[in-house]
Every structure is written in structure tokens, then in C-alpha cells.
Image (tube, rainbow, N blue to C red; front, side, top):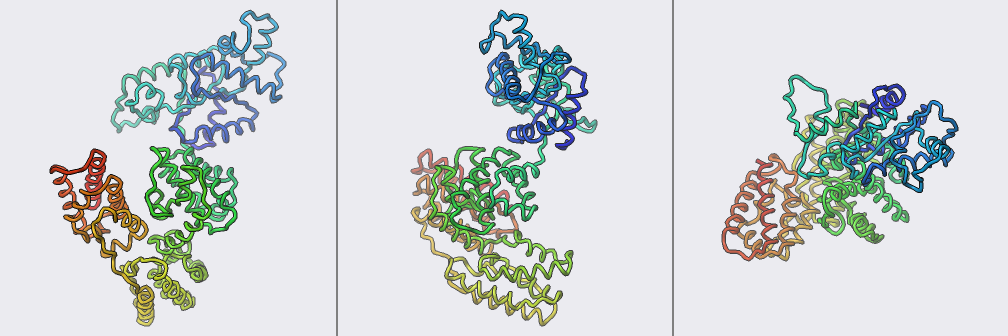
Length: 602
């Protein structure tokens, strides 16, 4: 159901429903139910001259506390001058509420007629929707709670909306309980197998049936929620990124769904941390994509925090693709601020330089550039769009790290081939690419060979020759030392190798191989002498290389090398060894990792 449809359904229930029952809105924690109530439903009801009273049941221990909360909420409304209620005619008097608040908050049990009349005046719920949130977080027995609600809706005629994560209602008393109530509420299909409902669920549903007529599964419009959350924080840097390109909102909502598991609270936490950090960075200006990377890295970290304990740092001195993502790494200064609330301005500057290098060598950088995406889809674009993209790219190439060098082979193909088609002079762009490439050797040890794993074919002879000459010049510009650093199988060197592999993964996977380049017998000897931390770093190396690997990306020899290493590790486990229990835990994780990589690459 859409937000608009849900609003109208609830308004219809409030104004026209005569069943004497409550309704329930259910959804997972963090899915945006409270956000919807506060920012969508309540304003909508107000626009239609309807009022709501919102009470959270979080932590309440008995029914009387609910009544007190409702009473106090209504009194606050009245004291605030929001409602003028001077007569009782036509009012809905919630006697069930009054019955439970007498004796509380200084109200004497022996009330005079005038006092009782005044109390009735204060608990008028006519045309008001009573919204009881956090049902599953109360400490009140669900049977007692629904009995109380039944008194409100059936005897007093109050309209009640219960907001809950229904999957958690019965799980409170049994952590092992696992049942998806959405299966019960969805439309039945004769072709589907009958759902096997646990007995405790049946009992709960029987109790619920008398009190609650309809249960609506809440599904947030995540793109709209993301847009509104970003705008509410009103950070000019984030606004610049997203307001100029609304497609970024769709990308961000995808991250919320996939990384945050549709938990908007996780997303809001990440936005808060990011805006706090940006406020501390205001002395300097950076490109939009630096702020975008900052945000997305913090989102990944926030999802890890909410899912488990705070992860330890895994990366080099400035960036972590493991705690962030392959294309949007987590920045160390953001990690430090989120964990310890410390901020190092100098670390920001060093991270910015590291990020520029990362962006320059990023393998998939072309997928993020809108102009490169147009060229990649040139057969379905207009001449005007293609020409404009070529012009824009030439402008970008004046900044050395504006386009990742991994895109240069493909970009040269587009420049030369498409330039000849639409009449664009591509020579300046090719010169800029060569100029940028010549600066590579002084900036990193990244291996030049990785850029020429795939070139492109042009049929027209003259253009083909130009393209091949360009590739030759690019190769010469990158022809610095390509020898892979020697590894001495010393446990003390694992951390250094780990950091270098994380930063320059492509350098270590030339020829679609990594593990097969090393000697398994020496690896196992090294692991036998390694500390728990060193064993963890060795596993980190494998994750940096193989975490997202598929069969087509690596040679069969790497799979065989994994199987061989796994066999040697298992042999070592069965022999006498010096590993303590923590080291053995790392070794068992290593075996699990190797099995995982072998399976996903086979």
C-alpha cells in the first residue's frame, strides 16, 4: 500500500468505521513506522481536521501507566491551547482510561460530581485517533494489553491504531521463536502450500481477532524517506550532491535497502555522523565525490555497528574497502570520529590525497561517471548527447584524477571511434590521457600491466592504427618497475603485505592469479609461527582478493592453490602444533574462508 493509500485508509477508519475494533500497522524495526506516523500521518490527519494522540508503550509495565500517558497527553494538548472543549455533548468519553488513572497523579479516588465532570472533559477522544506505538516493547502481557484496547474500542467507541513489529511480540519471551506474521496477513493463494502456524501464534491470533480487525504490513517508500531525511539535515555539501542529480537519491535508497537492511534508523545515524564530520571539515573545500565517499563509507560502518559490535579497523592508514565498499571505502578519520569522537584535521588532508590516488586507479570508476555511461550506451543515445559527453570528458581530463586510469583504454576507443562518427576532435583528449599517465610512476607502485588486459577493436584501418599507437604510448607512459615485491614468508611481514594488497589489489592479481604465486609449504610454516593478529591479517589478505571473486576472474591454478593450502592447514591441525585456542579460532575461520572462496569460484 502506498503512503497516500495508507493515509486515506486510516482516515476512513477514523471517520466511518463502525466495527468497534482497532487496526494494526506492523513492520520491522527501523523500517520507518514512527517516521511515517510523525511526518506523514499526523500532518495528513490535521489537514483533514482530524486529530491524533500518540502514546509510546515503550517500557510501560502495567495498564494504568497507559491510561496515565493518554491522560497526560490529552491534558498537554488542552493546556497548550490546541483544543477548545467546553461541552460534553457528542464527546467520546474513554471511561476505560478514567478507571485506570484514578488514584494516579494526585487524583483523589473520592471525586465530587464537578471533579468527575472535569475529568471527563479532559479525556475526550471524539474524532481523535489514539495511536499506541511500540506495542512489542512494552512489558505488559499481550492478553492484558489487548483486553484494555478492546475496552476502549468496543465499549467506549475509541478509534485505536496499534503500531508494532508483530514478529517481535511473541519473541520477547523466547529468543528462539521465529515466525513471519506477514505470511498470515498476505492474500491466500490456492496454489500456495498451507502455512504451518505454530500453536503459540494461533493462540495469539485468537486473542487478537476480537480486538483488531485489519493488520496492514508497513512498506516504506525508501526513496522518498531518503530524500526527506537528507533535506531535513539541510547540509549544503550533501544537498549539492543529491539535489543536482536526483538519480543519486535512487542509488542511496538502494544502499539503505541493501546495506542498512531497510533500517532507516541506521541511515539516520550515518547521516548524523557524516554531517557532524563535514561541519568539522568546513575550513577546506573538497570535490563532491569526496563527500559522497565519506557518506557511503559511514553508512557501511553504521550497518556493521548496528548488526554487531564495533568492528576493528581493517585497511591502510587512510582507507578501508573492507569496512566500506570496493568503490566507496571508509575513511580512517570518519572511523575514528564515529568510534571515539576524535577528529584529526591533518588526517583528513592525508586521506584526501590517498583518496585521489584511489580514485585514479579505481577499476570500476567509469561506471560512476555519467558521461562515460553515456558513451558506454552510445548506440542508444542521440548525437547531441554523445558529442556533449565527449566535450565534458575532455574538460575532466585536465584534472589528472578526475577519471580513473582503468577507463583509459576504453575511453580512447570511445574518443577515437565516436569522435570520428560525431565530428569531435579527440586528439587533445588523448594527449591529456598520456600526460596524466606519465605522472603515475611517481605516485604509486601499481603495476602498469593491469591496464592492458583488454583492448578494443576498430575496423576502419586509419582509426585502428591511431588507437593502437595510443595504447603503445600509454603503455610506455606507465612502464615503471612492474616486479611484484618479494615476500619472505616472515610473520612480521604479513601486516605490510595486507595493507599493500588492500590498496593495490589489482597489482597482485595480474594474470588472474594470486595465491598460486606463493608457495603453500612456506605459507603453512609461516602460519604455524603467526600470532592471532597475524593470522587475522592473513585472512584479511584473502578477503581483499577473493571476497567478491567469481569463477571467470581467476585462473584454475588459484582454486587448486586454495585446495592445497586448505589440505595443509587441516593436516597441521591434526598434528602437534603450538596454536593456542584463540589462534585455533583464527585457523578454523581460515578454513571456513577457504571453503567459501573455493565454492564461489568453482
